[in-house]
Image 1 (cartoon, one colour):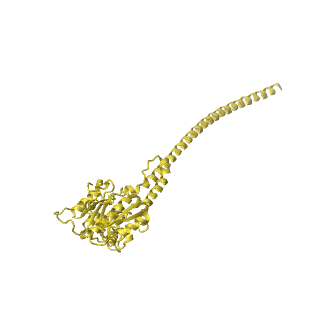
Image 2 (image 1 turned 30 degrees about the horizontal axis):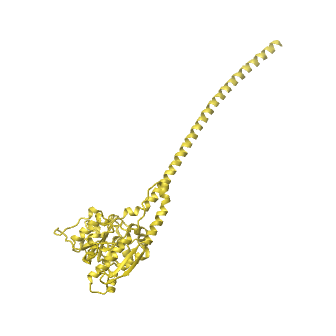
Image 3 (image 1 turned 45 degrees about the horizontal axis):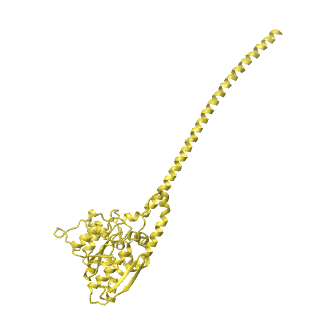
Length: 388
């Protein structure tokens, strides 16, 4: 029995040793699992920190996106201003305004450019598939002579009264002026549109930190707020809207788009009345007014479509002769009005200088006009602006 008990004891000891070894192995495994758990927890903490960093980076990116969107809204407000110029610089580069002076072979100033205006496309094939050519002067349709994109003074007066402001007239004696009529233009409606536009974009400008240039009541504002909305559906010029069949221009107008529109229209009206008074000095006052109302002008913002950037088909056929030169060389144009504004800003514009130079070389009579009226006419009537 003692031997049997001793054998059982030895078996129990062996089992105890095996259990101890298994326990030691389990303890080692537990330690390993604890180490892996600590490593996993460390990785989780690292991932959490990385996640927080990514969240912060995403928030910064969202802030930058909002800032860029605000800047884009502010810049998009003035995109049309940047795209427009005096007399259409954005349509035809100045490098392409290569005048052909008298004596040069192949052309003569003042002669009709029928060869340049000819195009091969028919009305049925219009518009042409080429992306390098745009619609005709004035808007969509077969190419036409830009000299037929005239606007009567009656249309321009009605446009000003409806969309820009008011015109106040004061009749005076026949001896006081050639036209016998004194007027004053007030652009209060356009000023209101500019003020509303500035208030609308002020919040976005402040949020984005962009300095906003105030919107001035000039031709840029008229093109953005009035002309383009009126021609959005037809995508043509105001002259095409008013005269679908075209109207020959009698007076070419050169001016700076930065001139206040009320001053520009005041100079335009004064020139029209004085011009018709000079053409018909013996006529009645009412007759001169009626003739002035029918006087047709080529004003780029009204005579050309503002919905395209490329040169017209007529200009594409003769890239050295932009639309302004074609109009100036047309025999129907009897005079050129250069609206110099209150401070003569038009004389500092390269494109206006080129237009005046082209007019002089074409033998056209150039009249400088300010809001007070044509300077030459004031000198002729003994006005106080002779020194100008």
